[in-house]
Image (cartoon, rainbow, N blue to C red):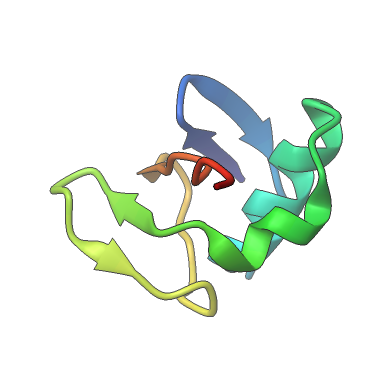
Length: 69
């Protein structure tokens, strides 16, 4: 299935959850995977969704990486 994370479309396996999409996104963008647990993810309607939430084909999610202090 295809899921849009921020502006990038990713191919994921059926049954993937938000955390799987984040892991794929962070791998593709070569970002520090330890930051995954710190991001707040939003759906297309700007609702906060859990990292364990299931995804469906065509879904769009967004997040911002928190700035370190």
